[in-house]
Image 1 (spheres, rainbow, N blue to C red):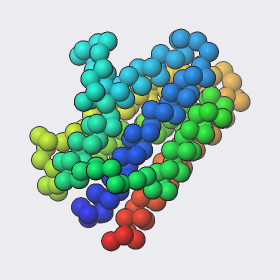
Image 2 (tube, rainbow, N blue to C red):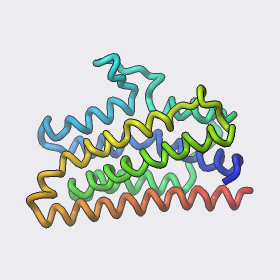
Image 3 (cartoon, rainbow, N blue to C red):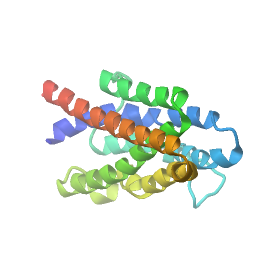
Image 4 (cartoon, helix red, strand yellow):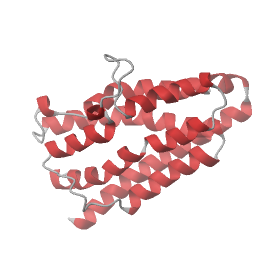
Amino acid sequence: MSRAHFIQTQTQFFFAVRYFSRPMAALMARMPSSALRQGLIHNLAEEHGADDAKPGLLDPTLAHDQTFTRFLASLGVTLDGTLHEGPAVRAFNNALMGVCLMEPVALAFGCLGVIEHTFAGISARIASVVVQRGWIPEGELVHYNLHAEIDERHAADFFKVVAKDWQTSDAARAEIMDGVHTGLHVFGRLYQDLWDDASRRS
């Protein structure tokens, strides 16, 4: 992938980063007890700037849409308000919201969990490659290096909620696996569509 293609995909991916906490919040609203909501609350807090070094405080500069904006800036991209969400990201965002609002809860946790798990590896790869290719100096890299570290924990938080159901209910296990396959499909489709769109524009 050329630097120009990468930048085109990433400017659209910003809209997925900015939106991701909203389906998560919708799913949290469906959980009947505080114990079941805790993992989601922790994830949502980190999405909005929580820092374990400063418990109880939200740092707006650490919110994930802001760290991604700084990542884009390190590539020379300024979000000036003229950029709009394209159909690939809109379809992904709406799919996640539909899953979290309408599908069985176990399915939704499987879907979000596998996306977080997958994104940890993707983030590590992107963080490595943009530095190796000289697109961003290592000391200026933001967002992707963070997600390479925290998204496995986020995935574990999601899967922990449905771990008991996985062990005790065949029906719930099937729903979780449906969620995993759905998450892999929509996430893979997003990346493919972003690549296709960038290729058409080149």
